[in-house]
Image 1 (cartoon, rainbow, N blue to C red):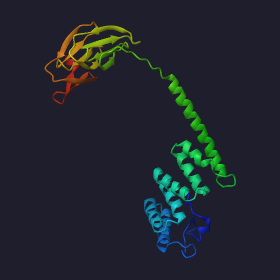
Image 2: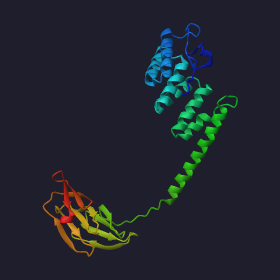
Image 3: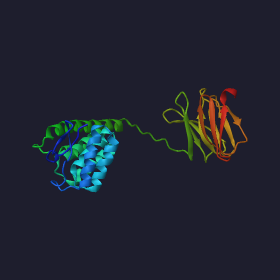
Image 4: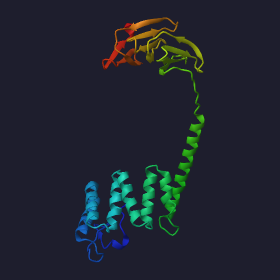
Length: 282
């Protein structure tokens, strides 16, 4: 992790590591307690005790909000810990404090780049002036970000173009819908009391009528259609041949149907139950 500290503030090098502590606060006018907390934070960073270091930097900022190096190091520690949202917030605070601080602007742009928010990254990376030491790297990241934004737009355009919407109308309070293995579509028409069978292209084939409030539909591996008769308190079974039988009766407002692994799941709204039927024993 890069330890970011102001070169002007580095009065000494500790333990031959390039991370700097303040030896005196009087020169810079910082709070004595803020400097102490900051220096402890630097020591903790060297020991890779990042959570504790972050706590120290936060306390230092609370003691003296003008201690800019504490912000830089706090943001860097959060980034090291994978706390991207917090790191971004810290660097954003730095930019708000000083919009002309190239280092802060670059770090904020880099954070947005790292989390995939390329449009925001470009806003900051493209403001780095040519004379800045961060200019070259900012331009490289900016080029990558621009390409990714362009690629995303192309992908979204293709996805939109590939979406083929088709509307089939003329139903009467449509409810459940399923398809069989041949692609035929079945739509329950609750108010009208029938299940309509359509071709894969949405053309009407036939209607299974005189049903009492058909709602949920399900289809099994043999293309048998199961219909929840909400008003008749039963479930009917429609065979591929068109034959209709009562699968189970004496229910209380069956509502939703679902089949998986030859088990028919039924929600029974009138009794607040979930029922399971083994279709292999049918």
